[in-house]
Every structure is written in structure tokens, then in C-alpha cells.
Image 1 (spheres, one colour):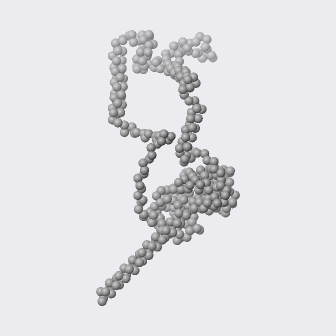
Image 2 (cartoon, rainbow, N blue to C red):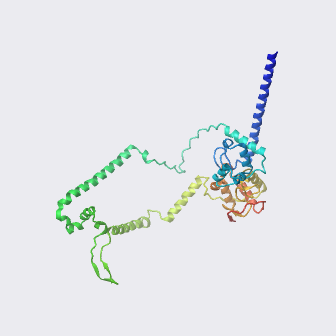
Image 3 (tube, rainbow, N blue to C red):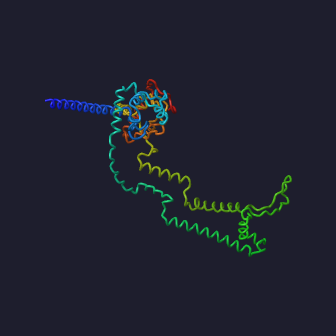
Length: 401
């Protein structure tokens, strides 16, 4: 009987422990589910699990920081920064001193704990297996061919190095042969080497150039004074221009003649105006083939119907309010309810800013996350905030429109 009682007692304890464990696991899972909802509504705009966006990547942040620290930082990061907390200051400095919005008034400690539970669960989840990317379709005749990849010099075939080495050896042998011939022929010439006629010839000037005489490059001074060119005791010599200068002058004349025939007579080359027109046409073709060209011109009109503005308001609340404030008053991002704009205040300028973002200022691009219609709706809603005078507005930034 005692044995049976002990078995029943141990079984009861195991059952209770199992139920408590299951209950704890279920509670943690429920906390993570709630935390995911809160995260997507408030944090997903600026944070990702794997990569830095506006703020740091959050994977395993619960291991790098304690839960108490995370609760304090999410509640009010600037309090930690101003208190000199080294971790908070490091994050603040790393991300261009952009303050994280304080959530102490909008999220409770329990909400923040749920967010941390979701981050913990997401960090420990196994990485998704990425499928092999499908083969890219062959480029059509209307699309420009991909640029050929460059080959590093050290990756060239051995025959190329052999040819380069052979050419170098031949050049060295030619120079050595010329030097040896000069050493043999110059003594054989004797006094005739110094004859004036030979020194004035190209062969003589070349030989004396090797011997240090620069007459081939600078010309020979005649030391002949102009008889009637005397100004205040300053006399003028009748010396030739340096040969290198005259050679460049003659070459420039030949170049000018060839240039005139090529561009203005036979018209086989494109002038600057024609080159500009061709580049404009190429840019237009590129824009037509690439729908995401940031330089493409848009001519949208701001939406004014109530349904579109309500849709834009919903999109704004889900994606933009965390950085620009629920009423557009500005927090981390600029004030959207005043008349000042950093990147243009037309609906097309706002659409472009929403679509492509401003990564250098922490504004993430929304193309791929929002459709064109959604970006136009939220851009129109932002324009509708003009003059709404929300409480606690951020100081004006940019130019008045």
C-alpha cells in the first residue's frame, strides 16, 4: 500500500509540474502573440530583426541587454541617454543621434514586456530556408545588355603575361643595342664628331643629347643681338624658339585642321548639343525600362475624396505616426503640419519621398511595402494636415512652400 501511495504521490507531483510548465509555455506564447501585434503597430517602421534600419537590428537584443534595461529604454530612451548610460549613449551616437520616440505614455510595462517576449521568440526561431532564385530571363533586344564584369590583372591568362614580358625584354634589348652602337661608333668618328654640320643634324643632336647636350630640346643660342632692339639698356637676342615648343605648336595646327574636318566639314562626329540630345534620349529609354527610376517625372494630383483620405490616415497611423507623431506634429521626423518642407511640399515630391525614402536621414523607403495607390493616399493625407496646428509641434525645418 505504501508503494502505491508513493507512486500516486509522485505521479501527482509530475502531473502538476507538467501542467504548470504547459501553462507557462502557453502564457509565454500568448505574450509573444500580443507583443507581435504591438511591435508591428509601433516598432516595425524603424526596426528589423536581421538588419539595421532607422534603429538597430533587434535579434538577440534580450541577450545583449537585460529586460529591465530594455523596458526603461523603450519607455524613454532619452532619460537613459541624459543619465549617461553607456549602452544607451552608444546606440544614440551610432544612429546619428536620432532620438527614439518615448512610449511611456502609450505603452504599459506589460506591453513592453510582451514586445520583448516577441523579440525573444523571433530571435530563437530557425532561419527560413530560402528557395533557389529562379533563373533570370534572357534580356530582350529592347533591354540594354548587362555590363561585362571586369577581370583583375592577376587573373589574366598566362599567355598575356608571357607576351607582356616578351615585349619588355625586346624593348630592353633595343635600348641596349642602341647604347652599344653609340659606344662603338662615337670613338670611330673621331674629330668629325664635333663638325658643325654633324652637330646640327638630327643624328648629331641625338648623340650629344645622350652625352648631356640639351640642344635637341632647347635649341641652340645664337647670341646675336638685334641692332635696333634696345630699350632702356635691355637688349634682345635673336634666338630660335625651343624645338619642343615649335613641335607642340605644329601638332596643335594639325589637330585643329583634323578637328574642323571631323566635326564641321564631314560632320562625322557629334557636337555637344547633339551629344546632349542623345543622352536625353538614352535617359528616357532607361526610365521607360526601369519603373523604379528615381528621376522619373510624376504628375499625380492630390486626392481629395474622403474615402481616400481616410485610407491614407489609416496607413499614416500604422507606418508614419511613430516618427512624425499621430497628428503630424513631428517627433523623430519633421513636422508635417506646418508650411516648411525639406524635400518639397508638392504631392509628387511627398510621393517620391515616401517611395524612395531618405536613408541618410533615417527615412526608410516604402516601395515594395506600400502600393502606388497607398503611397498616393498617404501623401494626400499628409497634405491635408497643413494648417491643422497640432499640439506640441516640432520646430520648422526646411523651406517654406
